[in-house]
Image 1 (cartoon, rainbow, N blue to C red):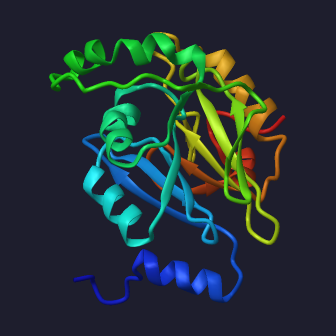
Image 2 (image 1 turned 135 degrees about the vertical axis):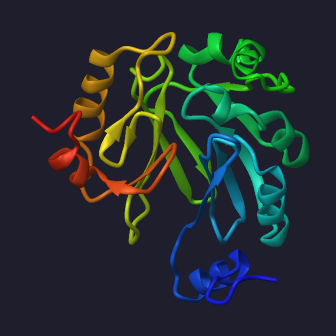
Length: 235
């Protein structure tokens, strides 16, 4: 049963096909820290990527099953625990290559240590199968997610830009950029100066109309943050 006024993902997919809208995107808060997990798919081929599976494996599975999706990649904006906690479970259930920037390999390998810091049970881990580099493109159907390396929150933090003709560009920013805020830099590997430089040089120089889906909290746009973010504004 669904709440009145809500739209199931299958219905949304059908509407997109009818009106020739070219990409499916579902984002929801997952896990104890309410990390934004996203499933992005090509409605024609049903190929999909899962971004930052920090929890809600049952919800991910329901979306995949309901829409006959083929998970081709499980990708991470960075390797903090709340963004990787259910990676192995999603991999086991749906397949897909596990992808991460090598700058965050030490964090990924120390997932059990991260869990102990919060009193969590150590997560089951699975090997990274593709190490990402700035400028790589992750293909799913006719679409691609461009890897933009944005170190600062962590050494291997990346954003994923998906620019589809006829649709608004989306930037999955992880914990690099939030609505009116930026990622913390007081954890191991954080660098405040590097974070500011990444945002100015790698994000504010892109399409300012792009929708930003951050790692936590509400969406925003690059233009709104370039003008009004109290921590980092465009030069």
